[in-house]
Length: 315
Image 1 (cartoon, one colour):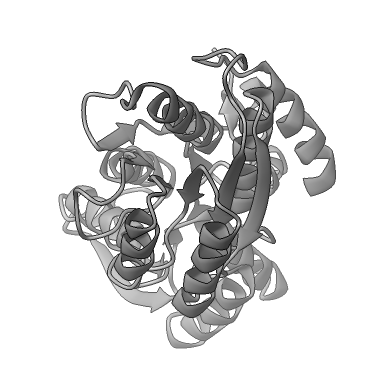
Image 2 (cartoon, rainbow, N blue to C red):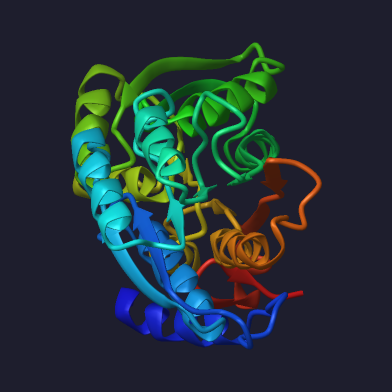
């Protein structure tokens, strides 16, 4: 399912509009993502690469897998290879600041995607999903699916990523309006499917009466679904996700996942490359601010047919 989706993703990347022609573009664009074993980050890297190549650059994609030391070494490699620009999904909101500073000191502009760093004025742009808006969207749908009374659990992403807290806070803002909904467990599963599965098993042992699970991303949600199926409880517990991954969409179609909140990663990954290209040619990104938010979309059984390519929902 994932490989089939990637073919569609590449077609979508080729069709994305570009802001500039290839007439004056050349040189290397270095793209650094988190972990391409996750389809979200794979798509991020491949869309950025396809966009850069369409603009006339040579592009490489590498991964730090959340490790700031690896990230730092990859930045060193980009500097050694005289990259024209770096597209980076930072490993850590605080811990990645030094790597960005190093690239900037070497005269290489950095464009951040998906996750932010806790310092403005270093990167030329920070392009991220509107996580607060997406979390509110998802939590509202979750209440519609689960109901307004009962015990539930939350699966939390990587604490080093500001997106995890933003989504969790967004969930809390909505769900706190329903006093008969009680969160009895909140477990860190680091965006990972296996950890989501294992944490779900532990939650079920301690709280067998839960009626719902709200997850910070699709991978953790899919892990939870696997554990619920093994326990014979999926029909009793409803799960909501966040990302809009191909596997999550398949789970919605199968009736196993209630919804997912689609992050427009295919859009802002391409946009980051376009802004880098604009900056290299004109000294300006073309954007009105460094931090740029891209609204999320809700995918349910009612509109899942409009999911035409990975992380793309057609009108």
